[in-house]
Every structure is written in C-alpha cells, then in structure tokens.
Amino acid sequence: MKDPVTTITGITYDRESIEQWLFTSQNTACPVTKQPLQKDSDLTPNHTLRRLIQAWCTENASHGVDRIPTPKPCLDKAHVLKLIKNLSHHELQIKTLIRLELLAAENERNRKCMVDAGLPKAMLLFIAACFKKGQVSGIQEALSILCFIRIPRSESKASFSESDDKIIESLTWILGRRMENYATVKSHAASVLKMLLEEASSIVLERLKPEFFERIVGVLRERITHQGINAALQVLLNACPWGRNRKMMVESGAVFELIELELGSPERRTTELNLGVLFHLCCCAEGRAQFLSHGGSIAVVAKRILRVSPAVDDRAVLILSQICKFSGTSMAIQEMVDVKAVTKLCMLLQADCAPYLKDKAREILRSHSDKWKNSPCIFSSLSSLEYQVSS
Image (tube, rainbow, N blue to C red; front, side, top):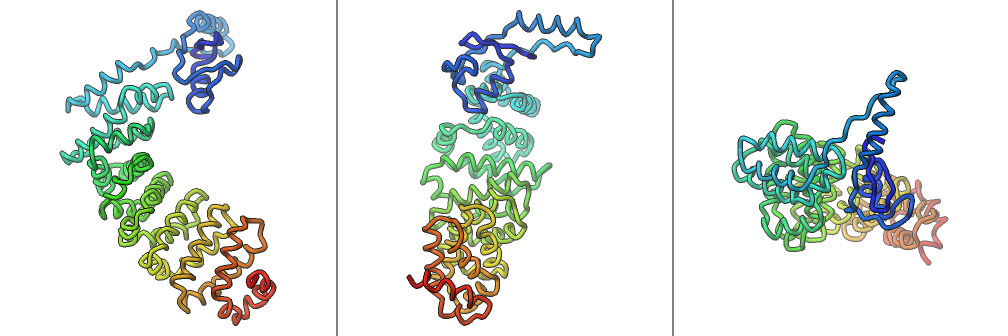
C-alpha cells in the first residue's frame, strides 16, 4: 500500500485500488464485508498504517526497498472552485487549464470532485467564450479536461437549456479550424459532441445546420484518430432519425466517406457504427443514389456479412434490401451477382443467424430471382435454395 485508507465498513485498502473498485468497476459493496459501500463514501486516511509502512521501507532500504512518499492532500471542491474562478482572469487562464488537466489525469477521485464542483459546465462556457472572441488558446486543454472527466447526463441537458445552440456552434467552429495539434483537438471536439448529443432533446437535434454535418463528415475524411472517427460516427447515428439531417449528411458527402472508411477495413465497432449510418442514409433516394455511384459500395457491404458481428449482418442485409427494393436497376442487380452479394445472401440462409435475417435474405432473393437464376455463377446456389425462397 502507498496510501492506505479506511472505509466506513472498517476495512483498510490502498486508496487507488478501492477507488478503482468503486468508480471504474461500478461496484457498490465492500470487497471484504460485502456491506453497501457507495461511491461517495468517506475514505479516511490511515496515517498509523502509512507510517508503519514508511518505517518498514526505511529499515529495508539496504535491500532496495524505496520509501513510499507521504500522499498529497486530496483535491477538494473548494480548490476546484478557486481554479474555476481563476479562468475569469485572462492572464491566469492557460496556467489554470494546465493545472486542471494534470489533476484530471491523475485519478478518478479528482475527476469526480471536478464534476461535483461544476467543472464540465465551466469548460463548456469557456469554449463558447473562446468561440465568441475567436480565441484558440486554451481550447486544447479545455477539451482534454472534458474528455477526462466526461460530461454527466444532467450537465448535457442543462448545457443546451442554458446556452442554447452556442455550445454546438462553438464545437463546430473548432472542427473547422486549423490549429496546433489539430488532430487531437478535433478528436476531442468530436468526443465532446458525442457526449452532448447522446442526451440532447429532439428540439436540439432538429436544429442542426448543414455546416455541422460538413464538419463531422470532415472528421471522417481526414481520418484524424480512431477515437475521433468513432465519435463522429456516433454523432451521425444519433442525428439520423430526422429526415432533414439525413438529407444534409448526404449533401455533405457522408455516403462516399463512409464507404471509403469501410474499404480501409476498420475494427469491429467502427464497422458497426459505419453500417448503421449507411443504412439510415440508404432509406432516402439521394442516399441510395450516392451509395450506388461508388464503385465499391455493394461489394464492401456484402463482404462484411458473416464476417464481423450479428449487428453488422443486420445492417448489411437491410442496406441491400433498400437497394433491391427501391433502387434495383439492372446495373445494380447485376453488380450484386458480380461482387458475390447474392452468394452471401444464400450463405446467410444456411448460417446460424437470427430467423428474421433469413426471412429478409429470402425476400431479397425472391424479389430478383428471375434475373439472378440466369447467371451461371450462382445458378446452382439458387437452385439448391429454390424451395426456401419460394416457400
């Protein structure tokens, strides 16, 4: 132990270990006694035990044992409030933000204290003020702090009700700026937008502007960071249920960028988000037209079937269904044969997957079976499944 603390259950633990148990593992019981132990439970420093440990370290220094340092005093709400107040003084802003960032990076205890002191709201207001003044200094640190401490749900809703759309405008402005460490800054800005929009009301999501989607699609185009890409995809997915948003995404070139991203064989979560957005965009005629205009669209979607996850199978089959049902031109139907999309649908019927997916695959195969049966490359596959398709 380096910093022994005693819980209200009378058991002593190392501070870092018990805080990790409570804050990051979502546990609410004492590991030893199994008695209830809330996240905000008092952890009392066990100075006697800590001095005994330090004394033992000193006695065994000759054996290479280093003496543990005396722990620093815990960060308290009053200190955070003082630092927040310092942000109102321009000459102290950068120094204060760097200090807050270091404290946020230290441990979960500090991050919890910062949330309790209202730091998320203070950081959002600081970013909005920077946007108003055209100031870029301090933005990187403020975004980093928000990504460390995360924005509580209640704070997300309050931010919109109190600051209207200024927060989103501010973050949109950041995504369009070229500044020092711009990849990290944009990644953090996308992550903050993700946290905010996950709890945003329908009124906020219905007011998003074309420039907003242009900037988010730009994050995908620039491939800034893995974290930034996934955050941007989640933002798009959260905004997809509204038809006007889907139209603006398509006009921003989202479909093309999503396909290009998928052609790079991203990791599983990225593919799940990617195809989720693609499905929504293929629900409108403009989205399907943009989808079919890309030479690799059908091929890359078909390739993902039975290779990534059940969620991807679901989205991929529904995308192909939208294309066949509403945009099934002779060229598109033939391309599905050429890139083995039809073969993948036939394989799906024999795979261990959800019954509704098999039903959807049968529906697709049935819809164009007359044309596909004439293709020698899949004649045998379709013939063997003729009973399933026609039943």
